[in-house]
Amino acid sequence: MKRVVLVLAALAAGLGVTPAAHAASGTVVLKFYDTAGNGTELSATQAKAVMHGSGGSDSDALVDPVTLEDVQGYPLYKGGSPARWRFDVPRKAVAFAVNWPTSRGFSTVVVDNGGAGFRTGGTLVFNQQAAEDAKRRLDAALAARPDYVRSAAFTAALADAVANLDAADAATTDAGRGKYGQRALNAVNTANDLLLSEYGPAYARARDTRPWIGLTVDDIKSHPDWAALARTHTQPYGWVRIVFDPIADHGNVEHYRGAVKAARAAGLHVIGQPIDSTFASRYTRAEYLARVKAYVDAYPDVEAWEVANEVNGCWVDSRTDAKGDCLDKRVAGDDRIKNKIADAAAYVRSKGAKVVLTLYWQLGTDDARWSTFTWARANLPASTRKNIDVVTLSTYVEDAPMGLAFDQVMRALQAEFPHQKVAVGELDYWSHDTTKAFWAFDKSDPLAGRRAVAAHYYAASLGYPRSLGGAFWWYFVQELPGDAGLQKAIRSVVDRLTLP
Image (cartoon, rainbow, N blue to C red; front, top):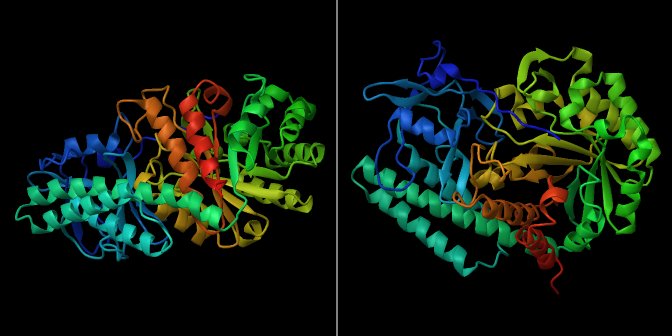
């Protein structure tokens, strides 16, 4: 079982230390206002506390406005009197991204200055600019979905967003702009979520696609009837992702024979995962390929193989300590995960099965080199990509929020991989652990938040060309059996797909 650990980088930014001088075309000063929408300006310390949620790390980053590649990690530093957060604009257009909450929970909020990015300096009311940029992207999302039938709830949220943006524009003080800007951001997030979750199943149904409604089986013994349970809540689109755990199988490929047979008997499609990200750095390049070969050869009827999992997580290419924290010790060059991916993808392709690669969604919550799109561009050459059929995003919103950026991220993923299918991969919400940094959907009721995460991500992921949907719930065998609300959240998406 994996454990994602956020690296507490950017200590200089957190302590308010001005970065070393570098070529810049201006400085952007950010004024942050409270998230309750009362128009109270936050001190630098208060604003940083909001960004951190319940103990998260810094998440500020400068990114490419189009591709979401990480240009500079942790650019914020304090300056002026009163001290406010600011960043220097490099010699290229950049957007500013940070984790920030709305009434729907934390999101990766991207402030991109009307889509053009920042090229010069100035002073911004963060809340207002974030709402304006989010509303512009919402308008674009609507224009791209002319067949969307607007619900009453969506229409009300959109009207609320427009009214508050108008009030922010008419305000004569920054306090007013911050007040109505945050309220507008809340409403835009609500409208955006409704659009994506309502449209996704309707889009897939209208095009008669065959999505993958997925669940992950990471422990075949914890629930003896998991295959029947999976069938009940996913058919006729059911896929199970079976994690072949090296601790459980001790190198014996026959250990999972019964699990694969059970899935087949239940009418489920199977994705095999020979090596979870937790174990990837423990194998040399040759050992990694040998394990992939052993399982692929032993189970020729498995339709798809996940050749590498959460490949841009720092722990996949770094050594870790006893707590699972990433150390600044990279694995040897030839044993880098990018080489293991190339080998495994080529082998699975030669056997005629689907090749699946899983990236980990993160932007600003770790060193820039591990950021999703930056890592993909740097480590997946055309020679590797030609052997990949499906690219998925592993998403744990309590560690690395997506939220309001969902549509942005999915479109960037499709643009980055124009020849592959895409999907939401591994998904869960660790509501049983109250120490997690970022909440989603319901701050006071983590269990309700978990159900809402499932309902939203399973549905929203369906609304894109070349999307398979996916959302392979990680703790399926531990959480689904005793949670009727979680069962309903997933099954309701399937039911909407099978409507006449």
